[in-house]
Length: 395
Image (cartoon, rainbow, N blue to C red; front, side, top):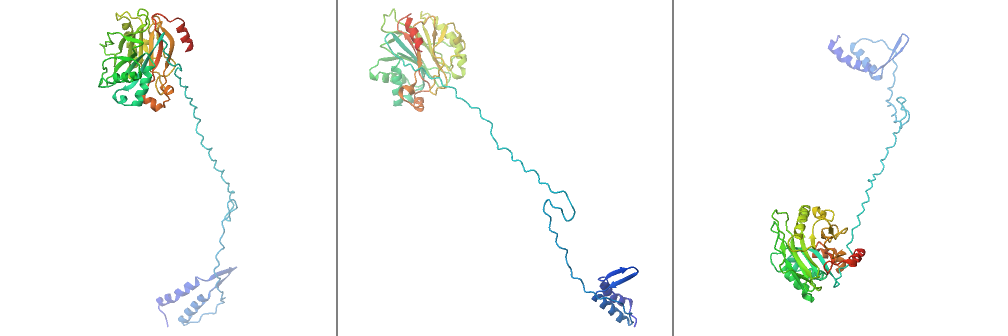
């Protein structure tokens, strides 16, 4: 029987597939096919289907070799030769250099400048001398008047001086200074006062006042006056008041004019410049008084008094110390012409409220942010002599 070609193809396909699994061994000119058992069965089946014989072939039946996977190559440790070839030994990188710990730059050792201490001298009131003082009583008005502890301190302060020039009386009523004087006199003293008008360009007006012991001092009955200021050079133009010492013969008693001033902090230098002219005008005001004592809150130290500090023979009493309660600034001073005011004894000081009355800073600030400043004059006109020399040496 003859098979169609398609049948042959169908029968040959498994044979070919089986043959593909055989192995070939070639030695010289002899080629040997090694068929697996499935391949031999496929060939035999093809021969039977053809109906023809098939010569016996020297077939060697070989059992399939079990699959043995190649052993897994363990990776070589770092630095050892790899099985896939030699390579340069692994070089460990240099250990990471830790940065030095951060050391902040050395801070400059700030040394707090030593705080100048006020003069330790306490104002004494012997009969042959008088003590003149200046005190900015911060915002001295009705609110402060109601603080009994504060007013007790203020009354004690006032009794320490024969004359006390006050700045910053700030009240809409007229009872603050009279009530203050009543408190001062409550223990038997006999003080009186003169006061100027309310001054200032803003709604916050201030008055100058001078309180004095009537047993030691008398005021000129003409009363005080405010320096004319047609050019508006001052926030609060100074007040001038004249006094004479009681006790000595009136012809020998020390007489003087006080110029009470509170400069505007932001205009202190300009106002100090203008005060030079004021001082000279008061010297020539027709009263014949040659002892002109300018005192108050200048808002400047002794090195920044402008033209006022450059007047011939002008002398500032307070120097090298602070005058505010926090002890950080010099604001207050007392000045006079050293050629004419020879009555000055050379004694002066800053009256430390905290040291004198055992106050802490907060308690002292309730009284004022300023300390009083004071100085001493002879009670006799034109006399200084050894008293001034001793005072200067004591200071």
